[in-house]
Image (cartoon, rainbow, N blue to C red; front, side):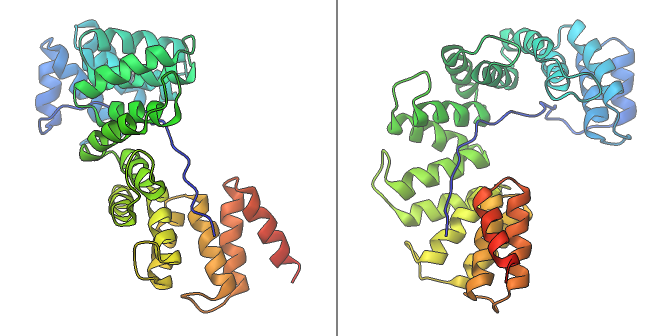
Length: 299
């Protein structure tokens, strides 16, 4: 049974207004020349709030907001180019727009720009630049920036590996409800990296990550129950967490669920269901699950 944790650097999404939206009011502000109104109108089209989702319209209004000096408009426009929503994907254009927004202290754009440097997309790859941008974003309370900065220290990419600093930034990110930061923090406690090994704390952070939508967090919580690490062994709870994990698209959750059905732990033994979940894991690229599926297929 595998408790696999692959740390992820997370690309931030959109940066919306904190205010409640009214389409007609927002449009009137934009029509009157207010850049923030155009940016907010773009966000409504981008997210499909009170209007049919339309990335081209989002692009139009974000561009107006950006030209009017609104940093959120530039940052969100960059995100469209970054993801290829309504436009041809163009990391170079995305990076330039993120720079505009980040220079005006839009921390969400700083985090996204850091990710481009981290991955070498549209810019020359540089962990040094990524670190500086993640730090700026984190200092501005971007949970994504904190999570990604923690990842650099956790893995020693561009910095001296330092689990204590990784813990510091993961904790800040997790407190900001970033699911990846929570599962990463749980993994530090699980393995005793930079902290005393503590399965109870690991479980707490895995479940928090799971509740925030992390399939890997659900899988890792299930693994603790599966093996009785820091909790009373409970195959039924393990199954439930694995199922949630699998439904969230995590290949390891699917594979581990397949193993429960194959062995009949916490569930009625079923090779048919075991094959089903191994196949799901295999389809998501987990080669070990592919081999297990092939073995069962021969029975």
